[in-house]
Amino acid sequence: AADVSHTMQHWHIYQKWNERLFCEMYSAYRSGRGGEKDPSKGWYKGELWFYDNYVIPLAKKLKECNVFGVASAECLTYAESNRKEWEIKGERIVDKMVKAYHSGQSLNQISFQMQDSEHLSATSVS
Image: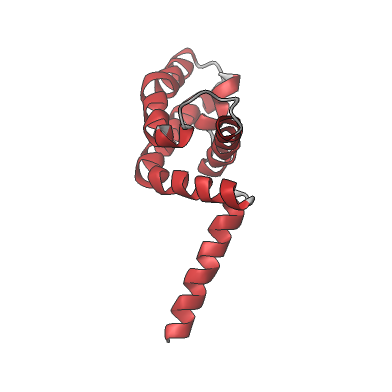
């Protein structure tokens, strides 16, 4: 469970480690060390598959066995919540991660810049 524990924690923890893994895989692909398949093309659906076929069943087993006591139920709650949020936001997040990679910035920097520009556009209109 340790190697996938980020998927069963708060959304921002999941996103932090998901971005890092994506950047590692995408960088390997771009440099010719990661095979012929662009990971950005299947990342969104791959995460959904991973939640449905590995993370959520694992979280259910952890809850059933009560391995982490009270936190065992939280693992399942967070896994299901993160899966739902990824389903809604994941495609946009993958696009942002690709843009962040190509600009040399982190996803957080891109997100903040987008929020700032949206805020500036909204305030300049009024």
